Image (tube, rainbow over all chains, first blue to last red; front, side, top):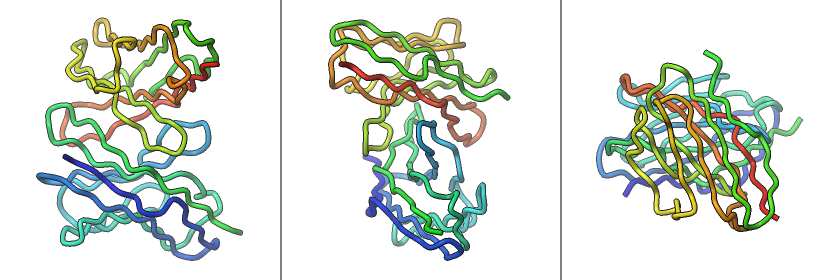
Length: 114
Length: 114
């Protein structure tokens, strides 16, 4: 069965510093991986995805993610954090059967301190 | 592209009452998903439609839950005889079936059962 794990409930980082939000995955076939961000009382906003190709994926708002097959990880990164990046971040893997539903991690709350 | 919309945004109901939520997907998207998100958790898959056909239902979707997508456009999710455990955010998402498209999420309907 497909699954993802987000080992950190919360990550604190100072504004201007680089940030990393961790995600590891378990899949039976090819991984299709996604990052979404959720602001309070809002739906999920798509940030980026890995389907195939380059291991470094660039996405919205300056975010990028590094796919590492040997470590089964897909960590979200940003070189310089902004206070406005403070939100809840979810990693997801797409089910590889017909429905393509997502299996989400439990989320990581990012707090960027001014 | 006006995005995915959901109505209502908030619903407070008494235990035992029936509630119905509506989702309007992005107009050209033929795939539609419902997820449920409880506090501190990632979204969990409930059900999937391709056009008007409901092709998968999670075991989370008890017989008190029913979903429809008449004519393959908007979708409704009905919960009968609500229970306090039904309190959650109900998220709708849609996607195109072209290529490896990501899902776009609506703002969600927050249900509180008192």
